Amino acid sequence: MAEQRIKVMIVDDSAVVRQVISQALMADAGIEVIGTAADPIFALQKMNAQWPDVLVVDIEMPRMDGITFLKKVMAERPTPVVVCSSLAEKGAQATFEALSAGAVSIITKPKVGLKNFLEDASNDIVQAVRSAARANMRAVRTTAAPATFSGFRPKLTADVMLSSANNAALVKTTEQLVAIGTSTGGTQALEIVLSKLPATALGIVVVQHMPEKFTAMFAERLNNLCQIEVREAKNGDRVMPGRALIAPGGRHMMLKRNGAQYVVEVVDGPLVNRHKPSVDVLFRSVAKFAGANALGIIMTGMGDDGARGMKEMHATGAHTIAQDEASCVVFGMPKEAIKLGAVDQVIALEQIPQAIVSFGK
Image (cartoon, rainbow, N blue to C red; front, top):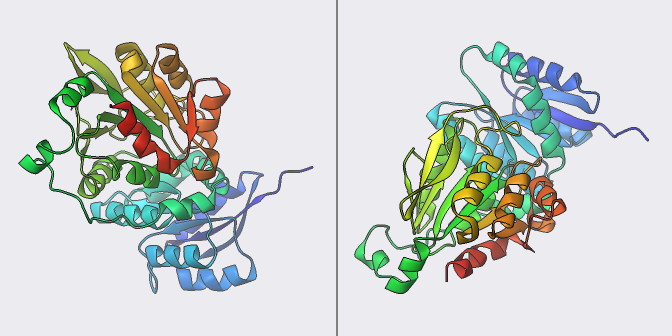
């Protein structure tokens, strides 16, 4: 039986974007572009006649902005959405609002050289749509709930430094750390996990597949939501209790040991498993330098990046966890790690914060 084609609608006020993305998608035999629209009002009219499997949506459009459109779609009929966004700071912030509202993926587009960029990125666009078509929209709706700021204490105050953990616990955590790898759906999943951790949680290193220049803003957003400090990693940053380091887009991040302390090395290099940063690169370095002192967690994401690295972590005595299928937006990465026998536990997203806290005790 022939594969059922993925029905896509493109909503963008740029005729060039609509044309080039349409051509890229229609070159794939498994994808059918059922319509394009210059703004969400036109799109909704067309969608009433035939609803797409995936939407490719701009953020800034006339008559209705992309985020309002996204919220409307998610309220009426949750549908996988791939966001097209400029790398401008304002656009990046809007992109995170879209991810919080339920978008599953990002395609970045420059403000100049747009046509050439989209033609060069045609394979990435096709893969983003294919990944989105497999998204578990029930999980997207769960993870897109707005974060709450209530109950959080200010970071870097005496109150935080003297909270729950005692001196013995702090000494213990200096030799332990948590390594997390995630991709599609990971922005929402990381928000849920990190925002529930106490200020004294173990040091955390994270690879989230994300384009260059977006990770700094993503880390800043999380830092404002969490009791722990969250920041984009810089070369030589120390992994320490109460801090999460996010690998910068376009760079690999590796764990190193500096005496009794763990630090990160941020380096350029080739794509690994089609990604930079790569989860495998991080996990393999954690296996080498931390071994049984590490907790490895692989979460929602397309593909198999991280599976082999987690297998190495498991072999060196690390405790390893995979997010379960029901709570994943895309079960690809956890599924591949499980298939390799790299995983000790399979648990729901909501259980991961407690697993991190328990490992540190």
